[in-house]
Length: 285
Length: 317
Image 1: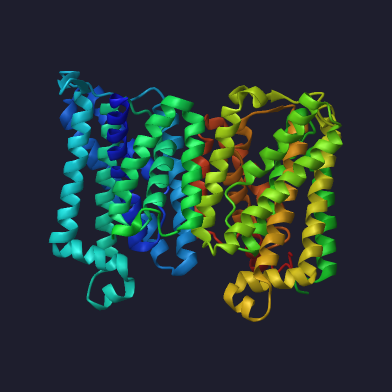
Image 2 (image 1 turned 45 degrees about the vertical axis):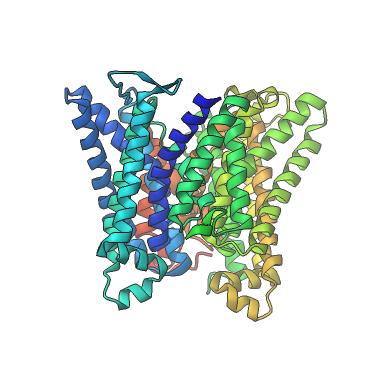
């Protein structure tokens, strides 16, 4: 039971890493980023291709994460900025459809061009024994990576001027603009940052098991469920929901199989939307 | 002459009926041509239904494939496992889709869900449907799918007759749409698509008309899905997936023109031509659909019918 629980926690951290980007982008401008899993896949695929070209795994992964960040910035400048020009429902709708289109574009391109490429990172020591329990080093690496990323994100949001600007923009767009915060540039920055975090999650997937070109939709859906259950505006909620759903997902997959598990998780998300649209776990913001 | 005069509508319906009736013969009339054009008619019919739900009452139903597919699977499985007559099971399929669509709409309106949350909820329904098909292997055969020959009315055996059956279905859908828009409900739909709050203040029962649009549209999707299952001779989850139904229907409707009578027909025609042109480049359809969606929403949100009205000064309804 304990190894499954650990697996669940690690997967939860990875999901939270992915979902936090969806939460921030939605919070900043009301755009639901439906191609976020695809960004993670872009990082993984870039890393895999660079490793295939002979680069060292660590360097290749770093470049992969960077590519995901740059891709996100490019997406913000070309697709999201036009959507921000609208207000209210029009903007939400446009953002939703444009990122959905992007998700299909990326999925279609990767599965067409690189159907056989996959990222699998192997660490030198496969597992260590901690307090009588065998733990995969990959799990430790992924957890450390995710926790470090979250700590850095929290420090950034609380401690820096730009971080405070981000939070004020999440609370009130007009108010922030009146204080002299440039909404467009802050958003571009955050979309880029979310891309980097998604890239980390993608590389973590390669570390944990394997990441293929067709996994974008699956990652997007899982991250979306986490973001919805955590409350699409709350970062602590997203983190908690990630951990919780990661554990639930692993246990349920072990007990009842993947199809039923996903149906169950989707139900949880539906109930979350219908009962508390602000998020089941959004108490602590 | 304004586009929504009844006489203009009747004339356009007749004209499109005649054009579509001769189109496959003009294009060569082979089995392949009939197949492509029949699929085009199903997309047009889905788009008419989707126009009612999304275009007029702003409910982003990302579960067209799930609604059509649930009806298709239900109608086929009930005939296979219980031996019920196909006409009855198709009716039950339509009923199921209509009730499901109406229920989703009712819950969404009651909970005051905005366009984005309706999108997420219906997306979740789509994914649940796909996973149910894969999970309930005993009834659905999972990804392998079900051969529907001998389990329906038997459209699959007569490609030419099928084409005219689907043409009849499309024209029926267009007539229902036009009649609905000419009734008091149409007035309410127009008010709703302008400003929902203002419509409510003016005395329009928002819940009632949104649920009405969703129910009628979903029933139509169910009917089309069930007939397509019979025509196609085979169903599997991917035929009713997001990428093969919802995205295409969204493209067809935006390309043709939302909130127009002829938009779905013109859009389906244009889409089929373009889809056919990119086929030779291999397995890139998903890529092309994605690019299409982005370009349409960024640069061509009005659609072809309004563009025709402006460019050729034609009163296309």
